Image 1 (spheres, helix red, strand yellow):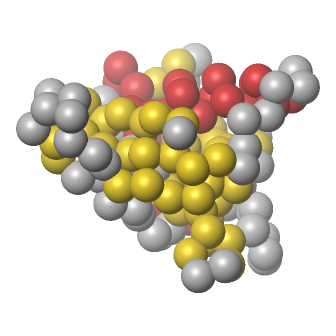
Image 2: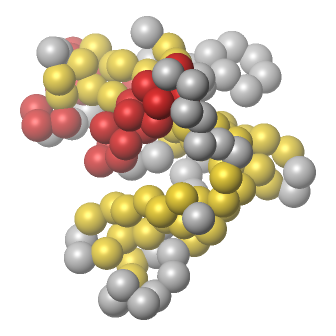
Length: 127
């Protein structure tokens, strides 16, 4: 199943296609007072990868639900152009929830979003 992961061309449908997407910077912060990287995000999406694909690339079983893993994506504006980027697997539940909110009529995007790593965990803050 593919959700909101198409920006020009064909949708991303496999782990390998997701893994080949560009990544954004997630700076490691020393405290809550530090700022992460901020981007203009047009939308967030995800796709489910099969258990076999996940096992082959050693994605931990804890990241999987019902034999699938949620691979999160974000459409981010760079120089006025949208670019589909992959997000860390740890943010899969966050992306899933935001897609569900959008489908229920509560779309939070486009928005400016801050990304970072604090205390060893990826975080996202919609500004």
